[in-house]
Image (cartoon, rainbow, N blue to C red; front, side):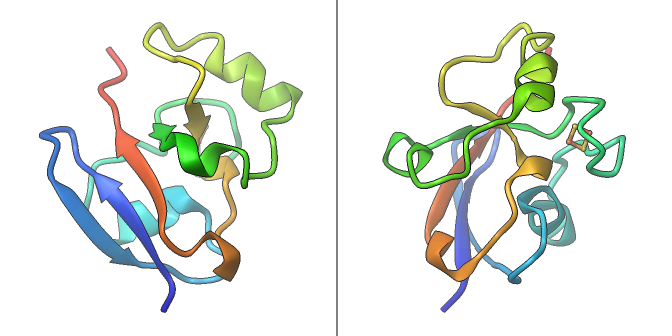
Length: 104
Ligand code: FES
């Protein structure tokens, strides 16, 4: 089974079917949640910012310099922050847990 777990801005958990090769931002958006994604995954808007559950952070490909630079512009970003458009889903990430955050 290929799924991710999304915790919405109200703290409610949702299990979302995931597709290999899709950006996590696309998976979240495809299921009808407001994840931003204004730049379409070009790593130039940071509206797709999510918090990654600590148990999963080390299993992801680390953020590159461009992603780090964008996250530096997000006031609410923390150590577990990632841009969901920069996380490409693969089966070994089934169960990945991310939380939507307000980007204010
Ligand atoms: S969609 Fe713009 S940075 Fe992710």
